[in-house]
Length: 206
Image (cartoon, one colour):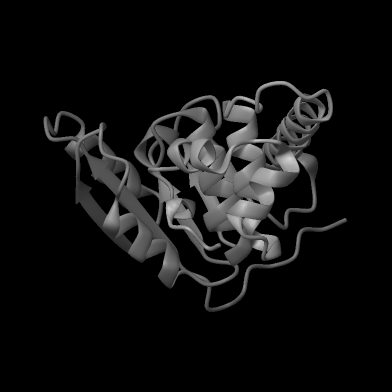
């Protein structure tokens, strides 16, 4: 199957993240200029900082079929996990392609690509996101089961463990007050509030 042509108004925008040391500034710009970018956005930010306001603004302005061009993956992410989140949460919903110019992942990656090779990174990102959602759901259910079992067999109220807190945070969206949740889980209300004192749930609703 032939690959669909890009929209006639599709654009290519280069993004260069320059570290505070700025050693590879020139190299990045040369690569992006040679990659036929209509515009190049430069952002100076430390590798330790997660927020990249210029990158966010650039991605927000891109349309389906447009392409974000980078010299290598670490220009937009500090880790593989962060790169996958960026692909799944930022580029895929917008239908934006990612062109990586150097390294093992060099090439154009398309969320709507016709071949596995074209969309492999986006498939990996979607798989990772699905696994993470499933693991959170499983952990929440295990926390609920553990808390209920502790309450069922009597004795001292169940401890407010990380799993119990995860279970509690998953339930207020159903409109249940913390008092009711504590009763169902067999956890003392005051103990539960202490465990959530740094959480928005800490303000009593009943």
